Length: 370
Ligand SMILES: *Cc1c(COP(=O)(O)O)cnc(C)c1O
Image (cartoon, rainbow, N blue to C red; front, side, top):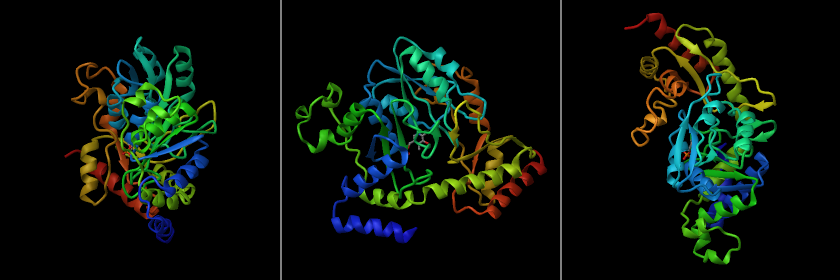
């Protein structure tokens, strides 16, 4: 991998343009082709991609956006940063850990502008039901597909099922840079035009009044959210191995599942939800539900095994959002926050290491509670 990365990085050095240059444009074209998006707009993080997408799609003050209570904080904070209000809905308990259409329907008010499904861990949210609901209630669907590179719903890449989505290239993501980077995906020309203006102060200080058809929103102010060419170079190199990495992740996930299904203390292993249309899963995270989650994480850390709790706290109980939706009101999101643990998963992991992790888990439960 390093020779390929350094060859792309060398291109950048030779051209001497380190921000928003030709390597970024090359990577945008490569991602448009990988995802099938009409527009792939590079920005400096997945979080910025969400804020810019929401603003570009016209979401702003006075609007409510329905977000799952079980997701990364940025799914909600981006709505706040765009000037709108996140309203939290519960998730399903079928294994997708994603927005429950019935809970979304119950959360709709006359201010609801958009629904923001999040595709987490290994598979997309129930986009069939969510798109039907959005059409019926005249709502926009914007996807937090930050984790979902390579996931497809009936052949359509995540982020392009609704009106637009995002990708994060944070180092730990399936396609990771060596720092922060992100992208907006959309098939909508107007949203794309708005987003590319917003990411760069209305294009390098040119008076944006001169650009035809730009809404008042982007006239107000943009931001500086450009992708570094060095990161685009790293990502170009890693993109050439993405399909192989995705296959390797799936082999490792199967190895975990074979060892952990039905094991003591393990309440659930990942379940791919059967859908009416074909779905392409991608194992970004291998997530289990376990008894005594925090103690297990500590035990594994003691053996040098790093785990993550995705996500430790439901968003409606985060201090900045507390008070509007009572603790206990979104029980499936709350249960997921208590029970889930992500085990190590990256393409260079070996099957022996999977054995070691699973043996450490079985030792922990064999010892019983302290
Ligand atoms: C990673 C992630 C983000 C944010 O991406 P950054 O590039 O870290 O800003 C947003 N939403 C979800 C669901 C994510 O997993």
